[in-house]
Amino acid sequence: ISAGSDGRIRSWNPAAEELFGYTADEAVGLTLTKLIPPRLRRKHLAGFRRHAVSSGKERFARVLHAEGLRKDGTEVPVEISLAVGWQRNERIFTVVVRDVTEQREMVEKLNDALQRLQFQLDRMPLAYIVWDVDFRVVEWNPAAER
Image (cartoon, rainbow, N blue to C red; front, side):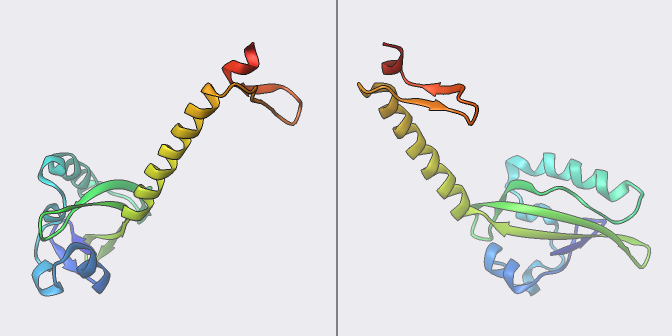
């Protein structure tokens, strides 16, 4: 997705169509804020304005994790990379957006599994001790203390 310094979308590719549900004809001309849930717009708009008025060479911002807003009103967790450059004396923003729904779900499942495992380790009657490569104890369960 690319946008001008006014925040209006200038280009929109098929991947953006699939992610957000807007066709290119619908998206071009909309403001980027249309892709952000209302509760988060003020925060994102402030960051965008800082980039829009700052001077300097082209640069890539760090990868950001945020929530996107689809045409149907549903939110989607996204990872955003922003490139800032110049075209015909205007600052242009190129935004690479990736749906991270599956990754977020995997992290949640992994965290749940780790919590269940820790629960079991803390309650099992057998001693559980972990040493590092220098044979220093780095972790143990209550049974190891008895």
